[in-house]
Image 1: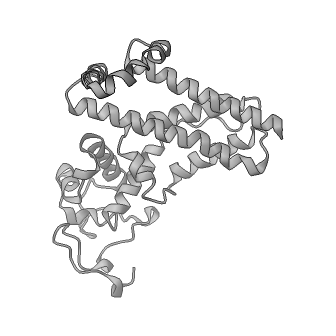
Image 2: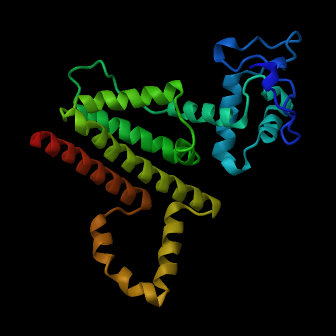
Image 3: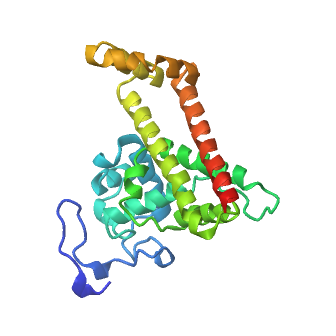
Length: 264
């Protein structure tokens, strides 16, 4: 960064006033910590990112700050700026880090069924969204072009090419599957978080919510009409009901891709 573009110190973050005093945030340009650089020993971008993910999981993005992260690491907030320029940069690193948890199938296996590979990607993506409920709002906020995110996108596109769909339909099919997974996983993750915040299991939270709705006369009749559907849905627990819904919906999408391929 040109020294002329350096911003003045932000008292809320202890940001250094002279950008030229900091090394580049390019991973390949990270200097070794030590007295000559003024960096704290034992601190690196991987550790900062891992602790950021842990804090985001525990407290959510609203409470996340450079000061909070620095306190967790046992360093000053200023020292973090040796590794990232802004909090947004750090959130992008955390976002890309969790995309590394998505299980990508072996794309070199020519004998693999694209349906199984698509299911594997969809299920794994859903797992990440539920495990890290803070991820879904950040996906739309940032470009999300880190190495893990782009590897996931490349895998999805590779599997979609194997479906046999016409080129003009492949992005639409990709959107249908993974926007569905995004929405399903986001709602599921938030439900899990709300249950935990209330100090209840998911089943307890669900029963309380349904009970409260049933007590409202204006809702009672309309919800009585759904009893047959809820009974047919099956599952003794919220997790089982949700799993059946997800699996069935995903199979509908796979069947839709097959049908559209047959239409040409």
